[in-house]
Image (tube, rainbow, N blue to C red):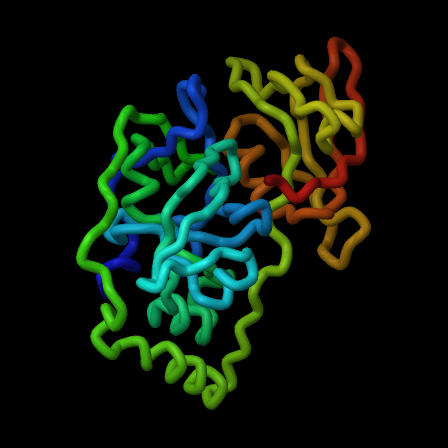
Length: 286
């Protein structure tokens, strides 16, 4: 179990989820790297959340701690297992009836106790969900590509109570040590902001391909065909305002990665021959 939290090194990994009869060809899943370089995505459990999960191909199943299981209302079967009515990963992946192991992993407790990841970790997404997709990791982009596979992985076996071999005591110990060392984890309380626009890269810049109805971009008047010119961050907040020119998709990803849910941005676009600047308040995604 101790190997579950080593950083993912595979460039392409088999994973998946079949939530509908005709799923899309692929999903674009927003992610971030934690300070410990784990891949973190956000997910809703039975409609509640979002919560922070790390992807771990070495974990045999989805794992959540007992406190979270109680919070989202899942019931145990007497052997430490439960089933979600609905498991949703930000970006469109949704699984009905996903199995989860309810267990207080000492690895997560320890990392949270010392604030090592830079964000509070709520659980692990493992093989029983990931094996349903082919996942492409591109660490220069801000999204992972998940392609549904026609594969239903078998239920994990051999996981029982006491599976951590007594190592579970390390989690509380690391929390206590963190307090004695004066470490007070300062987890982010706001996730990455949600713009609600699909973009496309052209030879002369980055354009809006489509906008989500009633999303932040649509409400601000951004339209399909607009060309991104610049984003101004730090509007109306304590952070010093600054401008980021948008010439490539990486520029746009970098600007939006720094913005959180509820932040107000000034987005400068070219529409035909006219340059317009509009204020956008980012949503919370998922």
